Image 1 (cartoon, rainbow, N blue to C red):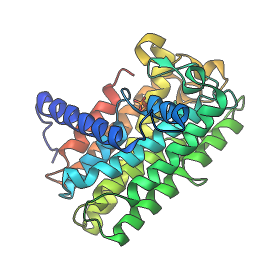
Image 2: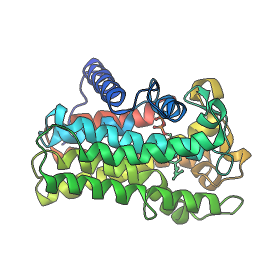
Image 3: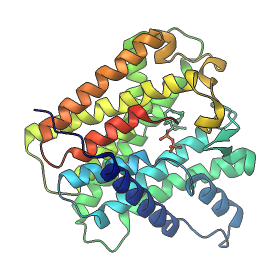
Length: 303
Ligand code: GRG
């Protein structure tokens, strides 16, 4: 049985509340720009604050709501994944990677500052993510903190996001099969999205084995769905709406779901992945509403 979608206003209010509390928590976690080394701290704050949809923090809170975790105990995990995400964007935009000048509607970090500062800002954001998980007044057991650190490290590392990025860079100009493309994106984009869901759920009460498997299926579909939609937006939207350079994948001769499958099939795939994500979320029963709303949001987003 399908869980009925909630009225749009309820989700919009919840989303705005999580985005606002995440912004406040990030603001507190990041060093002040007045503290030395000022330029590095200013670059870190520039890369993180004031923009971004906060999809990964939203997933942390949605999965935490499912397992009954208190919002206050989810904030640090939400910030930690967002800090890793922000670091990945800063490094991805560097000339040695995607070489982009626009991100979140403003100049990329290395354009606003300089190459070395952007590189260091990314490095320091990654460290800040793990420090965030280790600190905090919340009563989170050391074993649970360690689990969170492990989940995030695995997702960000060579068998997660950084590995996916390496495959992405190596695939420029080559024709990937759908399986190879999926493998790349499960790592590059999917790993952090999956970790967000796992970390949020881990902060609440344990799930039964069946529900744990359904949640992981949801997370895997959501990660791939995010990427398919990203590929469609890259070729169908425009720079002003996206806040980053449109058509960049084609310019960089990168294989995408659109180049490998064509637009029509890529769109069909996004519908299939959404259906599978919703089916998995349905299996979770009451409490899974936010995950359902978020899967729809990932598909309907305009940037
Ligand atoms: C440099 C180690 C390293 C990894 C970079 C994730 C990634 C790997 C690069 C980002 C490049 C990119 C455009 C990937 C496609 C999916 C994606 C992560 C889009 C940006 O995420 P959003 O839409 O961004 O959640 P906002 O700005 O809303 O946070």
